[in-house]
Length: 176
Image 1 (cartoon, helix red, strand yellow):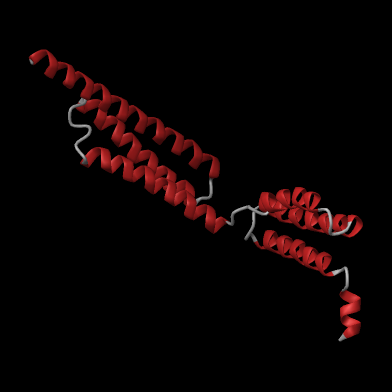
Image 2: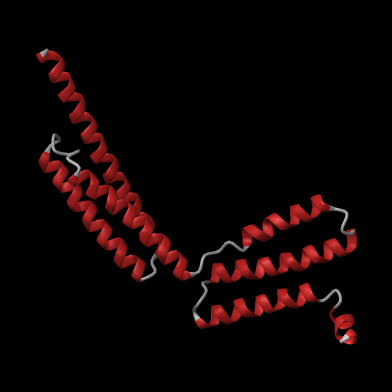
């Protein structure tokens, strides 16, 4: 057992980093990871090896250097898996859908121009449906574009509501 410990002394970090690189490459080859995720995982493994070499050369009494090397390692390893991306994108769409439903059912848009509101809400519904299809097809740039479009429509709906409320308040003041 002592022979194994002596053999592994100073090599454990490198072996773990190399196994992480190998796992990332296997995951990429099998389609479980995208190229950017694979590059991020390999970069994190290289950073771990570099950090280990730096600590070995400078000694453990250099915490500032260790923290400076650790931060990029942590940031580089924050890539999301396809499943996590899918979940995050679905939650993002659900939040927009909830906003739209609240605006519709909450009576906030009743005083605004009905035709314009109907057109905007129908367009937002259509965009949300297209975004859900884009999530299933893994078209990230399309999802981002569609979410920006939905946000623009939600902003327009809120602007219409604010203008309608302001004109309603103005009418009440003139009536008083």
